Structures are given as structure tokens and as C-alpha cells.
Image 1 (cartoon, rainbow, N blue to C red):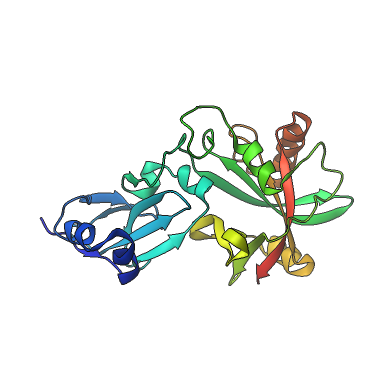
Image 2: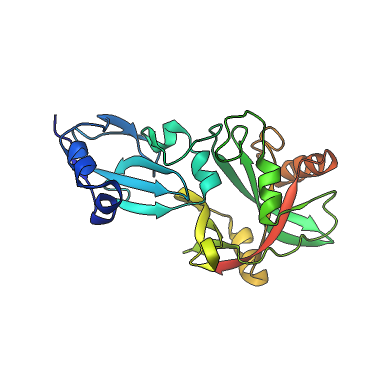
Length: 258
């Protein structure tokens, strides 16, 4: 049965006319899906649906979203993030240009962290599962080594502000968190290392601190190290524990936007 799919020219150029036409007549596309933007169910047989193609260096993932949430488009993302995409979020099967690793999603929590008697706006990144090295079939968690290769530094304790990571930035727009950006290949246009499926709300205090310092501290830890903490004091306790156990890396990044 034909689907109510929108396939943009950019997406068609990437997947080819033959694949695009198969999608439009109902082949290789789901009837029901989880919207890659709002994460709620959708049905391409009864409501307009956007095709969204996430592209990394070696992998491409075709996802689906309510047309009322986002238009059909091509989104450039970091390869390690794309390899860790979870099937329930993409709403479809990975269409791989390479081999993939263990699947997981990067969870991001915002909070204010006290360092040297000063409150700093911070983001805490923790995957929902182990992150394998791109192209690896192994199950070993390589999240921290991969970040170390990108320039993140181990945190022994939270007594000092981490060093600035060149070329990376945190994108805030209209007071909402949109993405963590990393340098593009060969120093080109920055690409999203992590991108919110929906812009994330941050507190007024967090936003004020970020706009004042123009810098955001980004902490990262393997799955199971931090968890979803309901209060900033509990978040700080979890960060201290992760640091003491050698399971925390960090970097300071300039704020992009307001």
C-alpha cells in the first residue's frame, strides 16, 4: 500500500531514485514507526511522514518522523553516534555503509556544577548501553577511549575546570539545547556529535550561567556510571563517584548561540 511519505530532493539524491520510489509505494518502509523527533508513534499509512537520512562517515540510517515535527532532510552526524543509534529511535533498519557496533543512545542531562566556589553550566553524557568501536563486532565498551581520542581528558576529581576542547561547541538556540558540535572532516563545517531529537529545556539559572561564561563543561561517563539524578546535588555526588572510579572524562566547550 502506498505510504504518505515525504522524500526530499536531498534524501532522494543520497538513496537514489529507485530506493526512493520503492519507499513511496510502500516497499522498505514501515506502516507504523516511532517518530525520530518527538519519539511518539506514527503511521505512514494515515499521516504525512518525513523520511530523515542520518549520515556518518561510513554508515547511513534512514529514519521516519511526523511531517508536522520535522521535514524530510539529510542530517550529518558523527560516525560513533550513528553507530550507536537504537532501532526504536530511528524507526527503521540501519542501512549500513559499513559494519556497526553495539547499539546505544547518548543521554544528556544539564545541571550546574560547583567547582572552586563557582557554579558552571554543565552537560553530563551517558549512553544507554556499551559503545563499541565503529566497525567492530566486539562487545567491549569503548566509549571513554573513543572520547579520549577526540581530546576529552580523564577527571580524577572535580576540583578544576577541564581544558577547552578545540573545535567543539555547545549549540543553544532560543534558550534551548540543540546539539553538541564537533569539527567536520578536514576542518570543515562542524557536525553534530550529539543532537537533540527535540530541543531540550534548560533552567533559567543554567542558561544565565552559560550566557555569562560563554562556556559549557561537558562530562561523559560509561553506561551505569551516573544515572538519571533528580537533583543537582545528587548529580554532583554521582559525578564525584564516577571520577573516583576512573569512569569520567570531560572537556570545556564554548557556547554557540544564546
